[in-house]
Length: 217
Image (cartoon, rainbow, N blue to C red; front, side, top):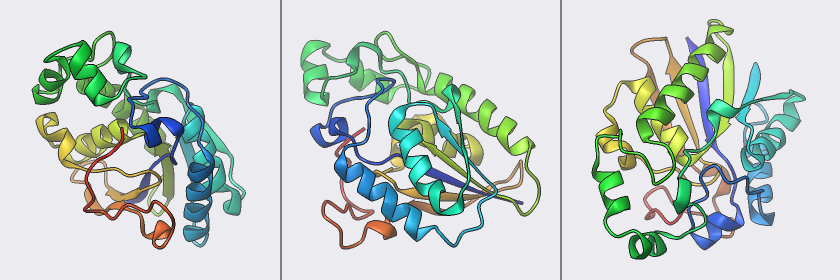
């Protein structure tokens, strides 16, 4: 069994302003850097074998800060990027429904195969991200602990892919900034043991409890 950590990146200005970032390369803001440092300190005693990340700045920087106490390099892959939201990127949900009426509602209500306007579908994200995760884990063995830093929608797609769930319910699972998930990976019949944990942020400014409503993507 491989212990797999899936971590969402820290906060960005886009998250704070609640607009869809997607594939836009937005860096961490000051709070996001602090969040990632808290996570790195919280996980400093975990025996990570390797650290991987999306190649977008917000994920790569988060991975570097978490990996720092372990003195591990971060290997980045484009396949772990956030979903490409196309023309919706840079807009809030309310702006999207005003400018393109009915589109984003249909996107979320679909079976995962509908593409964002000029972008990707959840099914396409799941395919590329799951292919890369399987490639990564094929290079690890029983007893290894692997950390992967990615993005909200991509992590949801990975969770659904790893657990064999249908994408029609992909938005049932919340993912906060620097939240971590743990999956015991067997190749098949994988088991989730921790989901959307933000214990490392308890007592900090802007901390979101696990039952808070979704405010950013």
